[in-house]
Length: 123
Image (tube, rainbow, N blue to C red):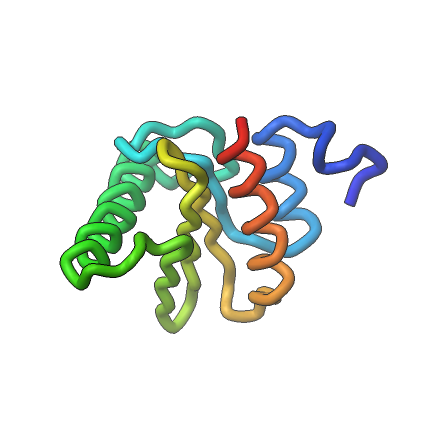
């Protein structure tokens, strides 16, 4: 972590620090309607497609839990052979998306991801 505290950093800085400190592959703060608020994504990734699909996944999760009469998810986790995607609810209007490799420290990234999502929710 840099000498500045997380509280002093902007969203883009937080996402870059997440990559540097925890080896995430990509991350973004996305509005519930799929617009990128802040991002640390590889150049070859279409920010528009990525953000819209993450918003759709969160929306589907919310619809599914509502149909079950349950509360909305605070985190959705997708896992494939070569990547894990975590989508955190960040208030009523936003979400945090974090992508990490299989070697990534899921526990550490989850802790920081929840902190960042809470910060976004309070903004």
